[in-house]
Length: 236
Image (cartoon, rainbow, N blue to C red; front, side, top):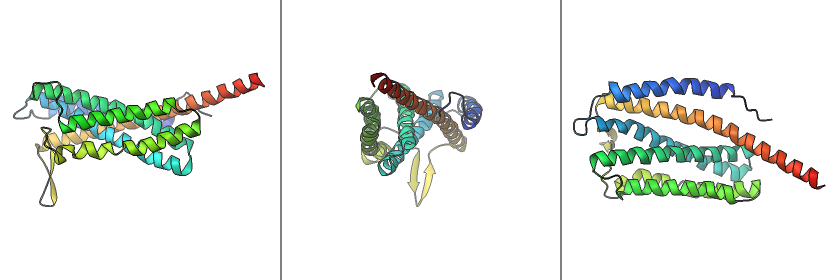
């Protein structure tokens, strides 16, 4: 039976994620050097990249769990997919918000229909639609089946977002570029370290949020099952 008390895993993840975020903020706001051209505003970059990575990761979880549910009809996989979709939307919203602040400072506009920005917005709408499909469908099995198919289709927007700045002409900077069979980072070493720390810290936050959200999802489903049982007993 689901419980409202935090599990040991949830407690440990939260205990690790909180200081990791504080440390990442210290590195992003104080330790890392200013970018030569953009100056202080470039520090938004560390949260922006970490948020985008975790949006990708969350939607990958939705994709894998959707395939798993369609193959095995596992309620746990469906609950994990639903939870990861909500968190992915949260990180995508943060990505769009930080990207808008960056655009205002660099391009002097809050929004431009750049390929990377436009495809990210499309991805956001696709996963909002995924949640609407879950909310509108009746019956647990039918809801899981429809959401599973939609979750697989929606994942096609992730590579679209990632490669949009390469496939189309874009003003969005590419910090990672292949060069002679290797990967080159267009940043100072201190910035690369800070970026990695921020990505790890936000990934830990993602894991903590996901563990709590999955617990809430199981509680919600248990409560719905109890309500249905009571309704049937009252009727008959």
